[in-house]
Amino acid sequence: MGILNGTEDWIEWIHEGSAPAVTQELKDSYGKTPDVKHCAQCKNLNGCRFLSRKMPELPLHPNCHCETEKADTPIPGITAFAECPIEKIKNWAFVDLAKKGFFESNGYGIMDAEEMQMRYEKQAAVKYADGDYDLGVLNNFGQRITIRIELPRRVGDNTKPLNFKTGWMVFPYGKIVLTTPATNLSSK
Image 1: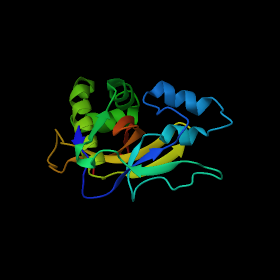
Image 2: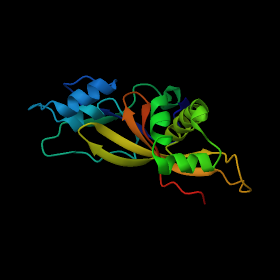
Image 3: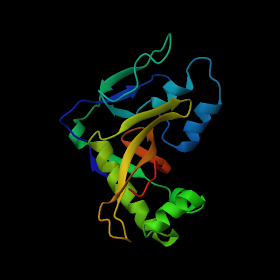
Image 4: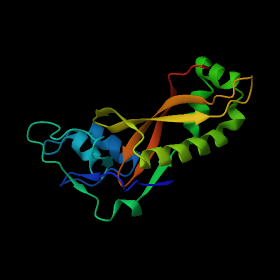
C-alpha cells in the first residue's frame, strides 16, 4: 500500500449513470454487455484515479459525457492498494517454460510465489502512488498500466536486480490489480 503523492494533480474519472466497477466481475460485465446509453470504456473508468499528465484523453469518443475532477479529499490522504492474485504468479510465472526458466535461473521457484506476491504488491502500490507508471491499453474491460518491478537475484555473480515490466488493471479509488506478472524478461 502506498500514499498517493501530493506534489502533482491526481484526478478522478467521473461517469455519471453507472456504478464504479469495484470488482473484476463488474468490469467484465461492463465489457461484455452492450449498453446503448453508456460505453464500457467510460463505465470501467468511473472512479479510477490517474495523474493528470498520465491519464486517458478526454473525450474518449463522440458524445462522451465523462468528466474528471480532483478527488474530493486531499490526495495525500488517499491510499493506493495493489492486489496480486497468487494464482497469477504460480500459474503464469512457473508454468510457461520460458518464464519458468527465467525465474528459476535467477533463483526463484514456485515455493517463492508468496514472497514474490508481497514484493509485487509493495512495489506496485508505491510506484502507482508516485506516478511511476505508463498507460497501457484501454478497452471495454478497463485501463491497464505498466509498472516496473525489481527482484533481487539469488544466484550468480551479478548483483544487479532483475528488472521487468508488469501489467496492472486500474480499479476505482486507488486500487490496481495484477494482470501480467512479467514482460520483457532477460537476465541482463
